[in-house]
Image (tube, rainbow, N blue to C red; front, side):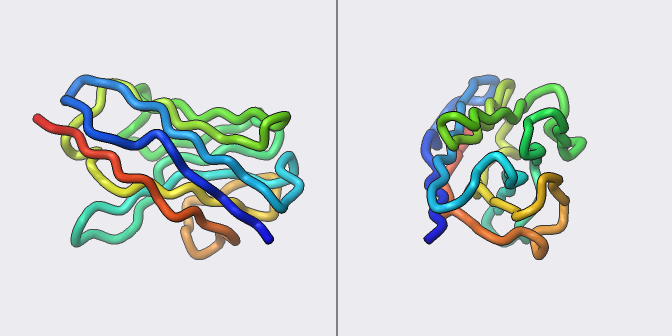
Length: 124
C-alpha cells in the first residue's frame, strides 16, 4: 500500500529554517505529483506548494514565495520542503500529499494520498 512519511518538523525561532522530508513507498514515484499542505489550529488545511513528477514545475502559495523551496529526488522517492525565514504564521502541522497525475493542484480534495503530518512551530 502507499505510504507517505514526513519528517523534519520541530520548534524554531522566527527567521530560522527547517527542511521537511516526505518518503514515499508503494507507488511509482516519478509519475506522481507531490505537494505540501498545512493546517493551523482552528483553521482549514491550506495549500503550500506542489511539484510535478519530473520536478520541472513547481508552484507556491503567495505567502511562502521566496522563502520556501520544494524539490524532489526521484531516485530516493522523497520530496522536500526547505523553509527559510520562518514566521510565527507558518506554525502548523505540515502534510505531504501525492497525486496520481504528473501535475499538481491547489485543491486538497484532488490529492490521493496523505502522510500523517509533522508539526512545525515557529516562536516569535
